[in-house]
Amino acid sequence: MRTTTSIALTLLLASIAFTADAVDEGAWINLFDGETLFGWQTTGDASWTVDDGALVASEGSGGTIATTSQFQNFEFTASVRLKANCSSGILFRGSTDGHANENGSSVLWLREARDSESPWRAVRIVANGDDVTVTVDGKAARFEGGDRTLGRIALLYHHNNNARVALKDVRLRPLDLDPLFNGKNLKGWNIIPERASKFNVVDSAINITDGNGQIETGGVYKNFLAQLDIISNGKHLNSGVFFRGPVGVFWKGYESQVRNQWGRDDRTRPVDFGTGGNYGNQAARKVVSTDGEWFTKTIVANGNHAAVWINGYQVSDYTDTRPISRNADGKSGYVNEAGTIHLQGHDPTTDLSFKNINIQEYPE
Image (cartoon, rainbow, N blue to C red; front, side):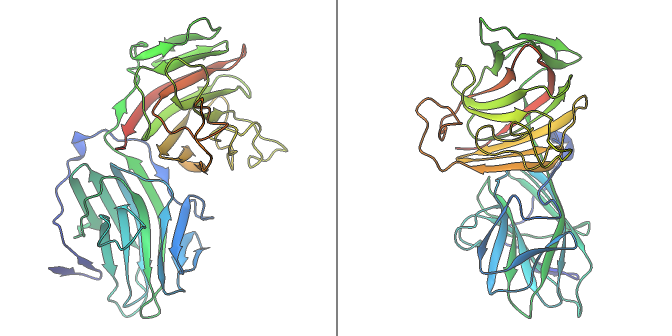
């Protein structure tokens, strides 16, 4: 069955209604910074460039450009533009291995039927468990549904009729997050004993002073999307959000750095890996956050890949190709086991607060 407006959309599975009130909504992140291909990877021989704030392909026989990170339950919005008589598709919960019709990906197929390049079309995809809705320019659209529950966001390019496809304003926010902190007390968290840091709940946030020290979740997590709000209550303070740490073991796993400091009056020169950097492995490409101001950190960890956004801007994108670390030290090797998420008290100057700590677990 086909529905044709100015865009023709192909349906294999019917969409299912989604009720927004039934889920928790996380903070928005930008999947495309409007300037670079950071956080994206390509397949095929299509040539992808950034033109006037958009991802554009107009050459090559075909291919995809896909996020390096994978997403499970989310709301996604973007603007897409096709040349006349051309087709494309937006892959979600997708895989770039093999053909989209065969690898379980969900696809919104697009075709522009006008005689000239289309205006920008507003695409919205809401996927939460088995409930999926898709709209184009505010109208319900049909899509090809796959059986994957987790995957990449991708744009497809087919070289037909001198095709040109463009994508911009690419944003996503996670849905159906579980709280790790109740905002009232430290229930569900464990403090590593015999350390100097002090942990208290102040104004609905975990406040950490003095150090060194560590407070960790009671549960363990391997693959997930996590979001939390952080403030550094002093100048150039040092802390971190660790993940995949062995239970009760001090400062192990991977560390997502917290340090709002940069050199030469240039935020692209982070000091000590910078906030959002994967400590010991990859510096933040830009220090987005500022001392004395709340900021939101988003961490996506899946398999050997970890990415971090600060206030919606992706600052790190790390794939760990090293041998497995024998002592779960993310600075020395790949940590492949589930572990705690823990917050660091670094030294006697420490004074940071953490709140709105939520997680969406991914399947193994």
